[in-house]
Image (tube, rainbow, N blue to C red; front, top):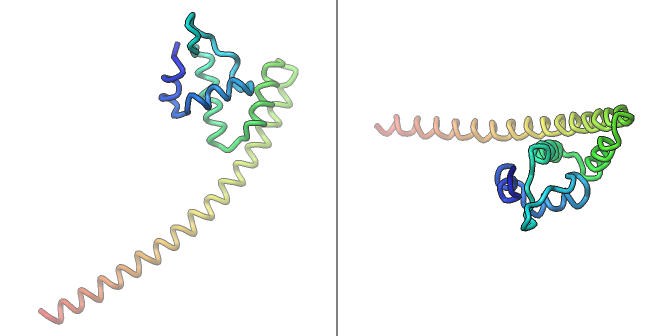
Length: 132
């Protein structure tokens, strides 16, 4: 069992965000201590890990909420859940391809600067040799 502050720190998610996830239905109502403090059990923590992973991959809250609702409806929604995951996977592949293009462009631009610096250093080296 973990308190909200511990979950927040462990997964680098603010306590407010965790409360929001609970409010919109991404997390089921979290058990509370007698004093009203949220006490995350193993299932809650696994759900937080899943949500963090999916959010990091760019899945919108609305899609995750729909997916979680389908999970709660049971096995009759397996095909719908699979379709959601496949659709989001395709979107992620597209974003990754765009990111790779950007990375390639950055690498190219950096190499231009590195080559320019090498040429400048070579010129300085040549001048130093002439002086000595």
